[in-house]
Image 1 (spheres, rainbow, N blue to C red):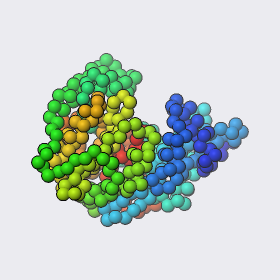
Image 2: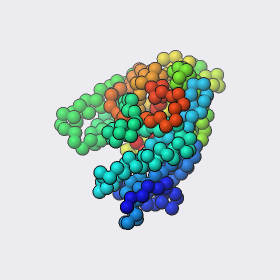
Image 3: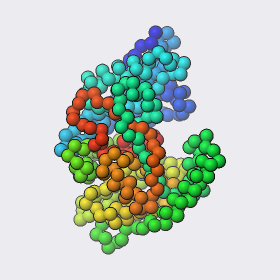
Image 4: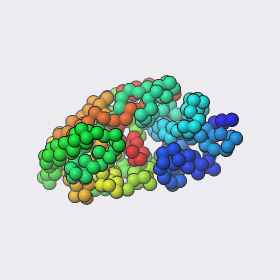
Length: 356
């Protein structure tokens, strides 16, 4: 018999062992607790499917409660979908659907209005009435072409010789394009510091409002910033830069660098008041600092569905980055309609947990 339950702390070890077995990974209990127990708003909602005869976890589905903020300042609770897993030995038993139906019930009780996330498994989500409105894309820039090539080529074990040749060419072209990097002028009136960016809510509102009256984004208060970056056990080396003008925060740039010296930009939040040249010089400055730290390659997520997100792509391209239309599909489901349209979601890689 299969039973569908709301997980409690006593289930954490079994859940994590199930996850590690299916992913062939070694996620720790500390990482699990950070993601699903110690969230930025409240504990996550975690549904498990159990084979009661064998007393084992055979499926999991969770959401991390995350606040959204609209252009007019309204805060709306959403949930980011995570840990969607079904044991291959139990497929064909509607476990995915049953877990989600249970999850939807709990989300409604908790007041979660929208559920969203990233996945390559389109069909199951479409069957559960999720929308798949767009995928993310990416920009990247290469400092060390050979090490970047090795890393990018290793991402897909099925790469052919032609694929690898294209990746090598991309690495070389990106390196050449990156020669246009230019540090910000000392006489520009701007001040750049390498510091934690905790108080970014006003800047977040400014960016969302510039995108339009119907726009919204993640509510990036201090609790969210600390959870996403500074209390995150998945991250290794965090570099955080701010740019101010007359004491006012007008931009942040936050990245995580792994042991392979690959840096991932989680957030580049730039005030609409910044000139194109100032944006270019700030991005260039941060990029050069990462180069000085020995980074081989810098990767960024981008999106094309809003004017602000499109502008970010242009800002990175102007700073020497190459844009690629390759990414993971985004899923969205309305639980309780509060008037949000997914096409107005101003988003960046900060919407991930730093685990990808």
